[in-house]
Length: 306
Image (cartoon, rainbow, N blue to C red; front, top):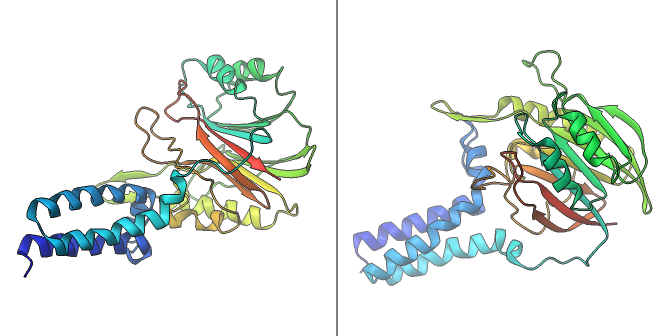
């Protein structure tokens, strides 16, 4: 008969497996705990080696067998992200970066991004003071540019039909302008490109505050649903991962998020990818982070197959 410690480990293993497989079982109110769990869902996998080690120490076969459940659940969800990229070298590429409104070296950041040789570069937290530095550093490589409020798009290919996208939720004052849409005329055909920066979330005594972010995601989802072009690329700081149910209005309109973890935030110790490159009727074949800049986010780059 297993010991009390072995039974407890077995129960905890089953609980972790359930949370991995069915995070929606955790309600999103109060405190949006469901969203918080989904934001950091891959990190639940750390329970597997801990529980396995404790099971070995206790020599509990029951606990050791139970640990296989969260291990299988984690591999089923995230194991594919550990595989090498599927796509061929070259092709169409895009870079997404929240450059930080207090970046001490915007010109250096711009030069680093230009070095990625991407077709598209999307930026958030562009300030009026920093914008000229980005324009100067990116102009040679990217002759086509669109900016709206604090977001911007630089392109090697002509841009047309540039317009703002209203993602300002109720409760945020006038002047908050964080969305744009443009048509990129690429050699492979026209693509609708969206750049968006959703409101920040906060973790405090009252829980995970994501209401404004969620409301903004609804507005962005409506814009994507109304988009007439079949091919779409969304580049943005969405302030959460694609597993977070708060982003469902957006992710339901787009395809997968790419074959890698590519955690982008915080730059010093990345724990989650909240900077996204998502597509519709296109395929992200490679996803990776780029070296740290003066921002608290890491840039993320994607190779995209038409």
